[in-house]
Image (cartoon, rainbow, N blue to C red; front, top):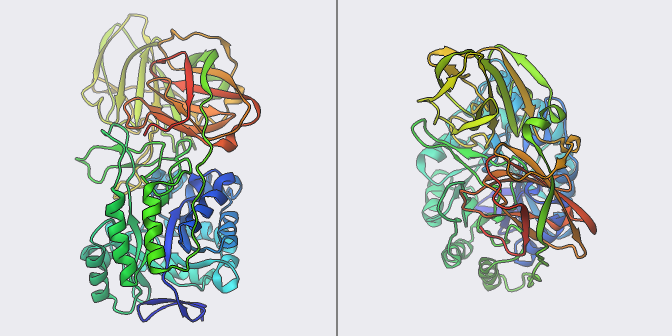
Length: 583
């Protein structure tokens, strides 16, 4: 029998009832050198537990190849939490949502014949089992029953919002048990009747997710599960930002505090989502489109979430409101006041060299020929860009169109840009005049994030999944180039040219005498920034965010390198380091 028991509407640890105050911190959204800082601040707020998802897509980036190093060394993250006296709740998926690319599913799953995601499907479950075979031996010794801090683990994630398949959730439960997981397992679903009825599994504790009316949710759960401990596994105390939205999403600290006070006073348990959001570094941010008639929206690089601990590590007024409530009901709780983080503006970082994208193509990619355009997934690529090239016959007045774009296409005729098209915006086509000798068509497609929630998760292929047509005729004989943008050390830079009208790489250097947290203002319309080889993520002038967070551990004393890939128009011949985030 486990040392952790869910019974009599309580959580017992070593036979003693414990009220859990947990905060969500995702190890894969935080630089590993900052894990201890963020976890210490969680503990100093009086909380006794940390919760984290696991990201299958990064842990198994290619089928059969696994990575648990650096930012993915989740056992280290869990051990640091234990050193600080924190319990851990682990949510390994396989599906996590989390505003994370593809809901955590690896891209290569999408190419498997016969696969059906998130249901009792042999192809899918065989892949899940192989993943579990790798992660469970790392998780098992970290359970509370074996001397570790993990007190509970979640099956899937908010499954009741997706469907009802006890056979599938039961198979996940059996995989956990067969792997030696002895601590309590649970499901977590929205605080509504349909979600709970769909997602609950007989014999497994049920928990709630939502951002308001917590007591109504607890009452509903008690009616359905009178013996389960009342637990809001996700209490949303902020929200995430999406590109092209009007403003950074916030939630009143007083509003959050009122709900939290009600939860604590009632004796219920809670996991605050997010306690520290972190950053969608690189190309890892997800996207949403719940129905076909709804707009596709993609998430920003920042995952600040208006959390008690900001993206860069400062505590906010929301932090102290929560701390006051913990102290009110548990005056013996060990709390403290974290010191402000050191922030610094390094000023303007002038670009000194550049190389155009078209000149760099052969340096960072190899052409693959095909009759129809290959998707990013068919090219065995997780993130980044794909470049396509073909010839159009002339003389002809052509109407170029694409049934689908995943997600943003810059289109060029003989090296001259003719339009930028986003998702389905090229379905009506664009007219081009093709000379008698024909023309070269170049299409650069950027993946803005695979849909992470709803029925399109696992189905959001990137690139040109429907091909491209001239009038009603398909264009064939394509050259495809995979551009994950993870090999920029191969670039050969030349004389700086800021007047270019095509996508271009720009490079600059800056000196650092004192290492601190800093932020980089967007230098152009739409692009990506690397510092010392680390991909900070995507920027886009449509907002709401106006800066990228640059964590201090990425910097080094002395000379530091910055590379910017601007796809549309450079706005300044420099990138500026400032000491304040503009979200």
